Amino acid sequence: MSAYKNSVCFNEARRVAIFGGTHGNEMSGVTLVNLWVKNSAEIQRKGVETKPFIANPKAVEKCTRYVDTDLNRAFSPENLSAPGGDDLPYEVQRAQEINRIFGPKGSPEAYDVIFDLHNTTSNMGCTLILESSKDHFNLQMMNYIKKAITPASCLVLLNEHPLLKYSTSRSVAKHPVGLEVGPQPQGVLRSNIFEAMRVILKHALDFIELFNEGPVCNTLETLLAEMEYKFIGMEFPPCTVEVFWVSERIDYPRDANGNIIAMVHPNLQDCDWEPLNPGDPMFQTFDGKTIHYQGSGTVYPTFINEAAYYEKQQAFVTTRRETLVASAIRKA
Image (cartoon, rainbow, N blue to C red; front, side):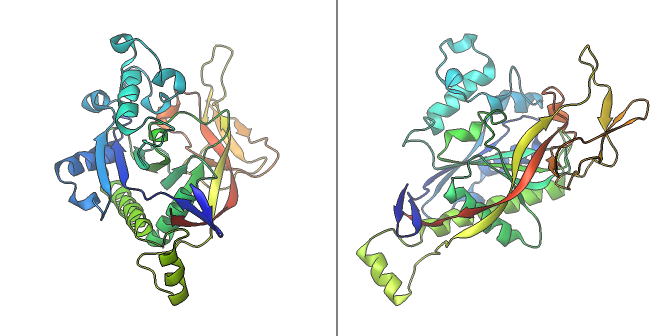
């Protein structure tokens, strides 16, 4: 990455992977990737090698989230460098293999982009997950997708909280992109969720092709083209992107033994992305009492009552709605 005038310059994105089955019971990504493994014509773009990949085949075979441990939390430096071979948990072994194929993580040899496809049981709709507010390439891509699918909605969740961020499978790439689409029960395939995911991937790959064909940073050819207002591809000028910034993880109320004693309040259930104000109902105890939100200001909850997060002691996460400015980008 470098700078040219007011643009941020990135190398062309020539190697792209699409992961399905990071969680083996999230069926949209599993089904799409298996479809594309058989025939990848739909996901190929000029000058781009796009590789569909089942990330956790044993979990997919069992139709379970994972076998030994959550693969989407397994890409820490400690796990990726751990000795032990067959004695390691299956998902740690798999993380090391994925890192060898698509990484090494943090290196110039790593894949340019990894799309990691997920389903949620929460009423989140289509959500793109951003791992860094400084990734102007991904910000521009997400802005492009949001405009391309209008009037449909696709929100952006930003997770760079130092205590809540985790080591995802997609983090192996230079530009990691998560995609959550729901609501969809675990182990179930819904046609509308499947098609929404497919459409977003189409526009994301279109963006990469357009970027690769766009103007180059700081060459005589580009300067002459600018003077004549002629470009082969598309230029991506500065833009703004609304994001929902993860701020806090909220657990279910529990007793002294750690047992859950309340459930998500009916006024909050299925209200992902809607404002939660101080004093609003948040939980309802099993004997019908209401527990109210006691925060200092309005937040926007999401992943509300996600089935997979009971084991992680999470009822939902709160977010702050903010606007980020993405710099203009060009290929280096």
